[in-house]
Length: 119
Image (cartoon, rainbow, N blue to C red; front, side, top):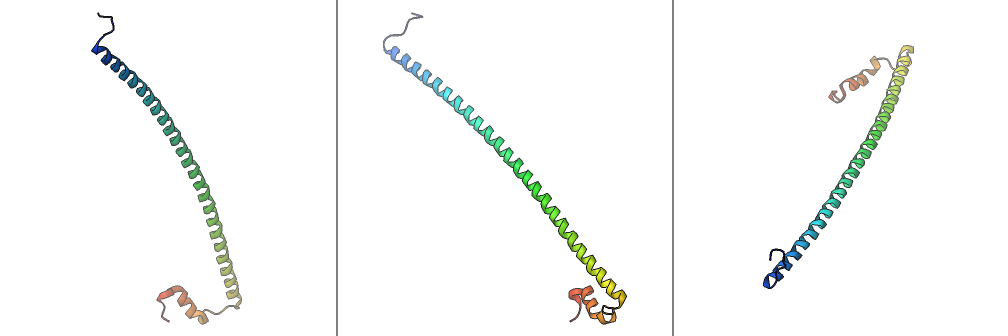
């Protein structure tokens, strides 16, 4: 009886157990495939996120460089205007065409002391 199929009431039980075992194997295979698919999708999403981050960082670096260059150009332009105004005022002062220092006392005090000067 060792190699013979069971008969009688045990035969139905063995058949049920075989179907359960087959179903378990099928579901285990499906779960393994689903895990592999989800791991692949996660890896692709991770790679896409890294690529997006690198692209954004590159764009931000380019914008920062552009903004820095614009700020330097604006500062240079402003400094040039300040120097030009100062040179013009100095030339007028040397030639006597500008206001004398004594006549500009109030203006000088306001410029130096700003908001602390009395009205």
